[in-house]
Image 1: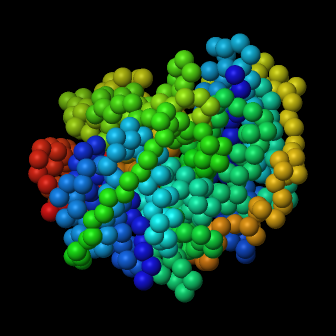
Image 2: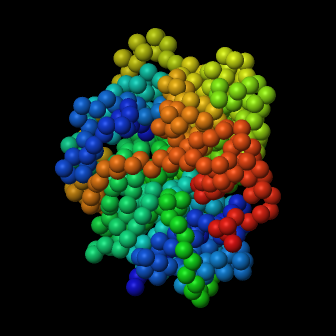
Image 3: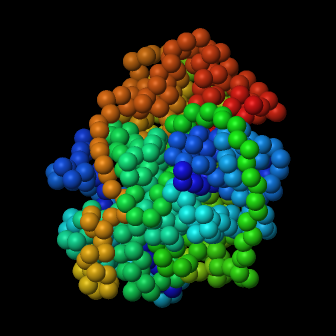
Length: 259
Length: 327
């Protein structure tokens, strides 16, 4: 069984981030780490692989040279090998471009199961897993709060606010997991030491058969027109008598489909 | 005017069209002529509601696949209609299902997708989408430069305004292949009482609740919302809640959709365990409490009074009373 985990390096904290003149995120001087949900995805992949013979877990990332740190962390958490897609032409890639590159890498590696971390709904990267699946032409199970493999398929549990849904698909499939799947194991020292000897391959775009003109900022389907900082962060504090406060609270919860 | 396609959503499995759809139609009217896609049975209440918010055309999709393969059926319907009526824009409510549908439609149509819109208007060269990024500290205006603008909308940021129209109702015949390779919805069950780390709703109590008896309020609200009851480390030290239910730097780290803090001041230790929460609501007596710095909605007041009122409010709304925006 071949499991591919898509991981990415993200800034440790969003406070203090800003934008460049071309409206891309300024990453210089910002500490980064392996995305939380991606760490869960690697852990889930390891939990599946450890119960099977001949299961291979490959972590794949796309990004600048610093993104290799995300691969190193994934190797510590249980991936067997890493692939780093590194190319100058990738800078400023949008969701669809990212999904095309990742799908090409996954196809080249071969796969039974693709796992990745689910971004918060509404964030730009939340759409990537579903796009990868659509490009690969396989079923996708998004926002898994728990997953298990059954015979020839995969089953997930997803909490959509109103209740718990169970979804199933046959393999090969793409699954994106939330951090609610379970906290990754704390790595033993031996795992950290072993990870240094695991293989990390670096692939340029040419290896994936994608032309440089097809990706990057110039080929992006979406264009940012303006970026404006917000002074008021949209946090609301109400101070009134209990029944009114409770009614406004309930309105707030109902609006967000949480009631 | 160009057509704007809106994916209608329902309350639960068989319910009527709900608020997010009203908000989407309100936005769609700004951008062009709204047309709605209604999956599942075309009941008169839903069609009436879509008409009341300005849908000029309604496409209904009635097939067994709509229930068995909800995401794929909706993707197929939107892709087919995109070919058939060439809309300028497709709007979907943001959420766990909406994000997936928008992404797959965008990949199929080779169009741009923008997620989590809080506002939209018609620019000189197509729709302009406003998103809130980096934890709400920046507003970004973007547009799609190729193909159809596909957009998921944070519908809570849009206030629905009715504008009656006479919709033309048509049915869309979709043929699904036998033995479809797609994600199948196996079951849907109302929420039980989950483990804190896996819970979509977490209610946490702190020292502000005053006593062990006062702490029972946490359990009752968690019960009403179908969430997990937790405590801060102070509550655990005072013996009000078990240690394994402490939300804390060294206790449980939670990632719920809703985090409701009752009488929790929000120390660094506590915030370390709950910064993954999507929506934070806090009730506390002290307006200077650090929890209000991370809360999306804060209520300053007596936690017992507000929480009891909230409990009544939740029960009232759950038991049959229609919400004002549904009326």
